[in-house]
Image (tube, rainbow, N blue to C red):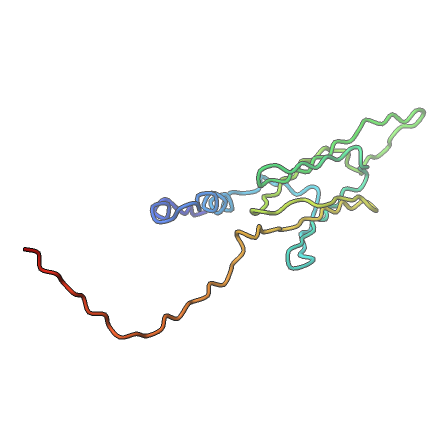
Length: 155
């Protein structure tokens, strides 16, 4: 696979180094991380939802942490002892998982719920007023006659 060198772009941009690092990491393989499966959907203009299939896990076995542009979801199955029973075949995975999501600026987790084996994480992008685009009014100056500059001669 080709590797793209973004270093020439660093010279002419300010503050976009995180963006180039993210673009550079897109070319890297995901190390085969496919469990658990998930969906990311846009539910409104500034709202998003991540839905993860975590069948077999309950609320006490899943932890969600949001920190510095990263969302981490961890699941660790507690050991259950079934007395008097023996598994002949175990097809339901009990493996632990950790899934990381990169969050854009000003995206925060608002809620999380677990229902029917699906973990729903709701996200909200709230841009501060100071960063929203604003319209600048252009004041028209009245056209006036050119002013003459008077000079005084000093003796």
